[in-house]
Length: 174
Image (cartoon, rainbow, N blue to C red; front, top):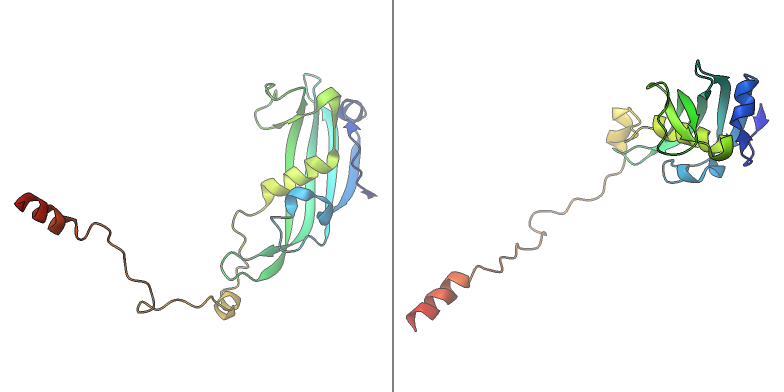
C-alpha cells in the first residue's frame, strides 16, 4: 500500500486503465476529521477501483478502513472502534452534472482530476457515527458525571411582569 499524496490524479486515465490504487493516510493529516475524532492517531486505508460505466463515464468504488478513536456522547470517555465503508462515485465536470446512475455519488473533478485523500476523507465522514457511543453501559455508568445543581441552589425564577397588574390598577384609579 502506498502512502497518500496531496497531488490530484487523472480520473479519466485511471478509469481507462481500470486501475486499482491502494493508499494510506494518517488520520491526523485529514483536516475535516480533527473535530470528529477524540484522537487523530491511526491510519486510514483506502482503495480506489477505477472503471468506466456503460456510457463511458469515469467511475470508481471507494473503500475505506480505519480504526479510529471516538468520544462517547453518553459518558465522554474515548473508545476505539473500526470503521469500514464503500461507495460508488462518478466523476463529473461541475456541481450541476447528475450522475448517470442514481446509486452513484457525483464527485466534481475539475479537468478530470481529483485528490484521492479528499475522496477517502469524504467516505470516512459519510460513514462516521453521528453520535458515537461506546455501547458499554457499565463503563458509561462509572464515568464521572458533572455535578448537578440542587433545586434549592438554583436561582429564583425572574418574572418581570409580576407587578404589572398592580401598576395598571393604580394607574386606572387616578
